[in-house]
Image (tube, rainbow, N blue to C red; front, side, top):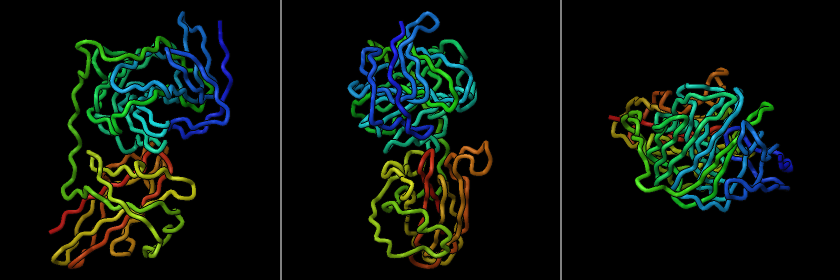
Length: 365
């Protein structure tokens, strides 16, 4: 017999965790109490199984205290554009690890995605190599079997498979135990059904089986630590060919990730009014020279050398074409006219969606 659950209104970006609502509804499922943050969530019978039906949102089990272990479930859905998956080690619903699959991309290189979520925002544009993306074959309108094995800072993700389709060698957030999250975020009216949910500790002789993929080579001259400002409004630097001064900013150091990219979203969550940070470093050279700087960013950047604009560009999701993803890599380059002594490089990086990141490398004589 169906048990109706009151509806909630999802207030979230497409690839991020659901935000809190004024009124919440709770559901008992899989041995946990779940806080419903979805337009629809109810227990039903589907294809002979008791199933959790979700539309446009997610559910949170804040008391799960999950650290190492196994999360497994069956999931069924029609062929449509959606992002379906699970999160674990959630801290206040703003910091957690997440895997999801794109139901509209069957057996493509990016069917399955791993990403950390920081300050409530996904960073999928920053983590986009073979250790974060993988193909998988999906069964539409039938059950798919998913298993996530978590051990320390590693995870194996199985999808209709006896071996991991994706091995994550370096989970990006802290190892503290936390809550769980189930999601099905989609724009279309379609239902995702979860069944046979099991959350358990690792069994005897059970653990990580996958192995890491070789990382992309990092360019020579990689700058591994940046000074990052407090957020400002993008309008402060928009159309400015000379870097504004005396902005009253505070600064902190930030190291890059293992892929060479600084995940700026670890420090701040961009808002509509404050969606830009300045990222800076100083290069000291003996002789005047023109040095090539390779860099990547998301979503927009204005790059200044010694206070003067040398590059401006937009690299956000679908900013160049409807197929453009805005993944961050060392895809752009500019010549820097360096003078003897100190040279100050400042990038004003603005974010809208998908990962707030910056990376740069400069080889000098």
